[in-house]
Image (cartoon, rainbow over all chains, first blue to last red; front, side, top):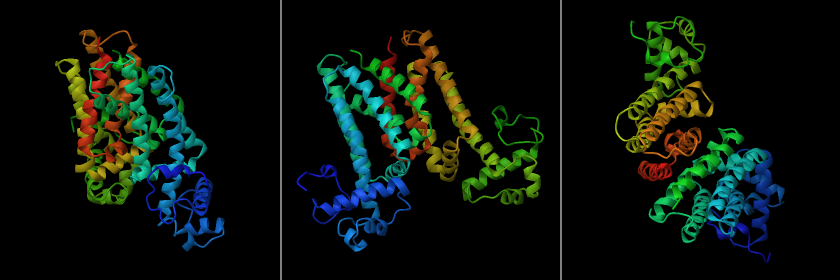
Length: 210
Length: 210
């Protein structure tokens, strides 16, 4: 494999052995499929080994536990959202517009994960409640993309510059929780969350007015 | 009992029999104590009946299920928070100051519930995830108190009046989730939540500036 695997740029808790190895990719692909169909809880390392025709011991040469495989799948899943958020943050439309789309993308992608990939959602809930490193990575990616929009909006004169940048970014980040946390997304109807996101992003934009 | 029981002003799902009855109060008091000590899951209706020296059948004359008793305890617990929020909303300090204290009270009371009354917290988590009516009641009480502050701040000229009142109240309400939802409170250190609340209330106040 000449291409750098997508999850390689993020911390890979519990992984071991050669970093770029076709077998590692195969295990992750098999895990992704099994977790979607049967759920994380019901899948065993033996199931994954069987799927790619190796022994469980062989799988353990790459991942120290089932959770380490779960981490890799979670990282891959969340990274798809992060990439979209970063694309929004770095395009050249007005910062106001990017901020609105940022909220929208976050909950829409979260819902896609929740409704279309229900069993994968369960893995993300476990990851969040148990503090897996893939979640810390996801949060950092959201914060980074958000900061780019705020800094750019300030430079363009779209946003006020009196309030310390860190405070502004921190506060906006916290207002994203109802649109990104899997438990909160699961407890509210999608339409209501979309309306809430529109109302909160408008509130945030009023707070950013110069 | 001549006094109107505290929980009587709220919807009492699954309760039956005479509304004001000493036995009902005794059952709720016994449940409150048992849930704190042993947790909601481990307590049975038979345990509660034994504690007040009646039969389980007698308990079922007042509550149709253990969940109905849980609802009553949850309602009582959440109502203590609601009363404090309403006291803040209706005092005569500037609306800006009341809004700051509103955020503070919400997470501090939530933490008191979580750390000091850990097993009661578990009942609230169940109530939120299963959509018990006590939670709907609690949300409505928070929204009502918040609205009083916003309306008053607008009348006093502290807050802008261009944005529709409903939209403003809805957006602020959504920003309260990280400080009121039991799952979110449990997943972050208290100090960080206090700092986040200060940052978010400042952001909201900037958005409300006339």
